[in-house]
Length: 238
Image 1: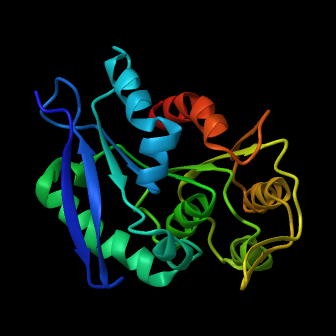
Image 2: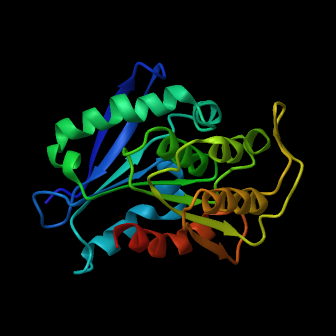
């Protein structure tokens, strides 16, 4: 049985094209769950997510799950698209999902629809879950960059009249403590990664949520995210 297919998807909203990798449920003709990974290149090439989901899928207790990896297209596109970018939201909501449902119609009735991201794409995953309610039921955000734009998404969550409908799992490393980091000429990270994640967690709690919060012994690094990912996915599919 073919375990993965690679596709190309053009986005009118973003004006570019990217690769999408799809891993179907093992030994099943339909899926109960959908897991969408942003940052496909990082997750596949550095975090080891493909091997992790294969091992998870082989466990008898794992329900039939369709795993989808969405390319960031390029480093330049990632800088633009991931920090709470409305066209990226529209790409996911109006282009990616309808396209996936044509390939796999049972996605429309999946019990769990999970989005997974790290760093900037952890921020993007959270923004989409907040802004397109019902599209995803669970969010796994590994070291999400909630520091972006002086905590813009944290304040947007606090101001929102309605709480997010998705469940959140927030993970961050205890050594992600750097402040005043100049990532680019126009991108300054004032607060630390761990402080930003804690503030987003607190904002969720203020809204009546009970987010799952995990601090791991590590820095802002793919090795740490890979170690944390199996437990995160078990939480997502539980």
